Amino acid sequence: MNKAYFIAPLIAVLVFGGFYSSHQSGAKAREAERVAKVETKLKEKQAAEAAAKKAAMADAIQAAETRKKEREAKEAKEKADKEVRAAAVDAREKAFREQEKSNKQIERLKKEIEVEQAAITSILSKRKEAEAEKAFLLDFVTKAQTNVQALQALLNKLNTPPPPPPAPAAK
Image (cartoon, rainbow, N blue to C red; front, side):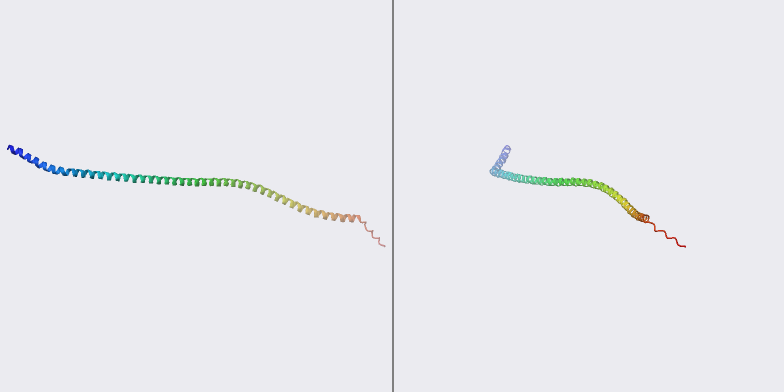
């Protein structure tokens, strides 16, 4: 029995050694192949990461340029809007000043109209008085001329000698 305990492990060690040596001879090749695959995958991954990083950088640069162009366009639009607003405010203020000027001119003209209407009313009343005085004077002149003629007739009558008295009639 002693031999069985020694022979069985020895056989098992020899069988194990056979398997181990056959496995060991292919294991180095398999390990080298596995390392090559890992290195290839790692290089591919690094290349893909580098390409992705390069693409991301290009996208980032393009996005930055796009944002810059958008910002410039926005600033230009805001500037144009600001100029339009400033022009509108200037136009509104100018219109307000012109309106105030027109209102003052209207008030001044209304006062002048009132003064002129008062002058016209005064002139019309003086004209009526003058026409009334003219009518009175014309009437007075005609009455005076009539009186002059009557007085001249009376004077002529008084200046002419009376006709001789008619002779007494013979009886």
